[in-house]
Length: 379
Image (cartoon, rainbow, N blue to C red):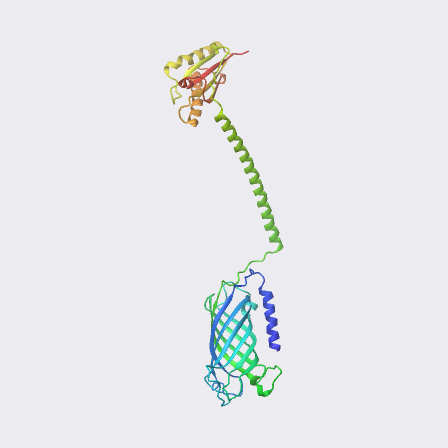
């Protein structure tokens, strides 16, 4: 009984120790099923090998923690011999045992759990259950008895799914023979058998998954990172909302412009003598020879009026690409300014050249390919 208490204590310790740093498994995880086959023989008062006979079994268990598992098993002694010159049952089996057991993996318990597993491991096993002997009629009655077992499993882990084991253990008949009127449970070598089996076990699932425990400093640092990311996310959301509002405003302005009726804007001057026009060919910012007299008239005026200045505004018609026309309008204004500076030696600071984009001054579209030069007299 002391052995059972010791093994139970180790098992409980294994359950608490190995549960740390692991993902919590589900109920249907980490089950195993296996077949066992070997030999059994009485522990005392019989020829060890002479009384030996075959033993077959089946077991199902669940790994509760990396170091501890629970299972159920059935064992059947093959009817190949007799003890004490007494004929046993003519059935295929002389006796059977059905019970539960617990096993402590000593490698995982003392060496720590490895997710990839150990190639070799040793388990300490203890169990209890119900035994039954089959006897021929006339040679006595079948006997039921309470039994316990203790032993070791030497496991060779071929893979994470398959294990081959050597299993030596001792099974005690705790009740005794019926004729002995034994009523108290005790460990008696005269009522025990030695058993040696080889087992083949298949494991379902992927085993236990380890997780690295974090200390409080690491947790605080991670929480700080999470809070920073949340702040960045809030800022991004606010920025996105601002841009969304701006986009909606621009969309409204565009819709209003598209719905507005076209208007012809005419540039009107109170003094027609102060305005001169330089027209250009389509897609060009080059001043043609027929337009040079208009440039010369501006230069002549500026030379005769030293305090006067001129503002040159370039325009383009609606033909072609908008971006190109915006650049073209600016280039047309610069073309007039460059001619005044380089050809007629007018000071550059007396000339302002501006590109105005698409022009709508004239109903005749080709007239809007123009630079409008406005003289500003000193006051």
